[in-house]
Image 1 (cartoon, rainbow, N blue to C red):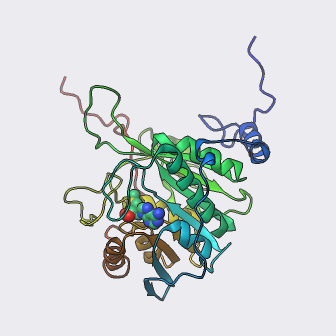
Image 2: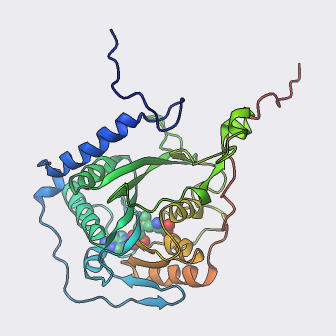
Image 3: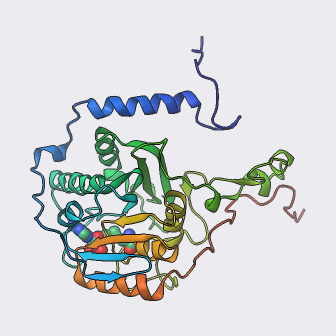
Amino acid sequence: MAERKRTTGFDRPGGYALPAGATIVQRRAAAEVAKADIRLMGDRVPSHAARAGEPTPAHKAGSPDTRLYVGDCRDVLPRLPDQGQADLIFADPPFNWEVPYEGWKDGMPRDAYERFTFDWLDGCLGLLSPRGSLWVNIPDDTAAEIVMHLKRRGLVMMNWCVWHFRFGQNRRTSFIMSKVHALYFVRDPAQRIWNPDPILEPSDRATIYGDARTMAKARDRGMRVPMDVWYGPYWGRVQGNNTERRRHHHNQLPEAYLERVVLACSNPESLVVDPFCGSGTTQTVARAYGRRSISVEQSKTNAKHAWERITGIGMVHKGQALGTANPIHAKRGSRTSSK
Ligand SMILES: C[S@@+](CC[C@H](N)C(=O)[O-])C[C@H]1O[C@@H](n2cnc3c(N)ncnc32)[C@H](O)[C@@H]1O
């Protein structure tokens, strides 16, 4: 006989909502995992010894305070004067996929890469405020280790989102890669900054099915918080003649991605931090929305080009992806038939 669930309440009535009981169990488990002695491969490599002294920003602007530091984020993050003050940290690290970053060897032995990962994550944790969120953009091969490391540091996972893109090259040996994980962790679910209003989008129930119940709701009529799989117009990989593209950089993220994260998880007075600046997408979006921000980039050349974007060019598609629907079916009943 099927086992009966003790908790049958749902976060949302009906549908594929997470049962409230599962959420409670996950939060309790977070405390237990933090106490457990979990060993990962990177633990057998010594931690990076960070330099001493407060770092000096290579680029700096005001209104709002915007700073870009050149250096290894493992050295810079623990020495910043902003410890415990970052409401949002967004990290898109090198994936160890032998990308030819200027000045960085992106092909370490596995245990060294894990150690590198734990060290920069720990640098982020020192900066995180009690209401803060830490987001990590990471592919399949290191997602599990990051999840385990953050859990053993006592953070709580709010969502394991997926950024889905349809650009991957065909290969006959396995399924085509079409996603990266966007891991969303917080210090404290009760205190975290969470703003659903600016990121609401039309729901499939409204746009496809014309469901009268969703249109009759007092709050969020016909709208929903986006699902945990992210895709659609403005969400493609930044390649070719995309107007967001910055030619000097590898693996630039779309503005729409950072726009969603910045609006949902920070407030206008918040400090936003990115340990791996790259082309400066996080700071470009943070500055466009009036947030203070800090980023770190090991390459002086990358930092120079990123700074031109952050303080000069700015966002190219500000607000354009917000409030738009991305259904995968036509509106029900609206299909035309040739028969
Ligand atoms: C994946 S890219 C970041 C892309 C960025 N999210 C964007 O949208 O443009 C990673 C960046 O981190 C830089 N980097 C690599 N190792 C670093 C380190 N230890 N400290 C700081 N920056 C580093 C690389 O030079 C590269 O520019």
